[in-house]
Length: 206
Image 1 (cartoon, rainbow, N blue to C red):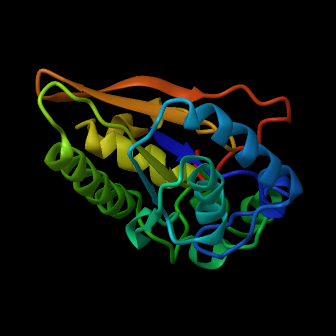
Image 2: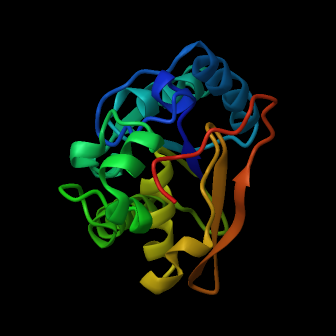
């Protein structure tokens, strides 16, 4: 299960966060607590999180309910946005019109590099689950990360070609996607699940 962090002030202001370490705001903390109650009912076996505080704080809400420890993995960090970090959408559009059109920060991390980095982390997590599985037992990992990182990483993990990465829409704050394995292949079972009453705030990617 791939879980996007709760809302931050920069999310609400539509600022590109990237790897700037912005904490959850009050709304984000409430979102994390509410979503954690739903996810705890699924009895996860493993919680892994980006080491950025907005993701780690989201994961901590689930850890408190389940008694599980959170494993931090820096490869689950959000896409590095270079000079875009801290700018809002209007500022990016005005200063970098060509790059805005392709959503490519000029000195940021390229999408394929993000996809490779995050997919590698997902492969390691899947490997941990496989090592721990008993006969006939299925295990669940909850991975707390970021909008662009999760979209690009899961696309690579599922074997999608890069020209189709944009087919998957963004994850709303504190919503999640579910991946499952059958006949040796990973599949996307749910995307952007989790009903929240607050307005949807989009991620750092398109």
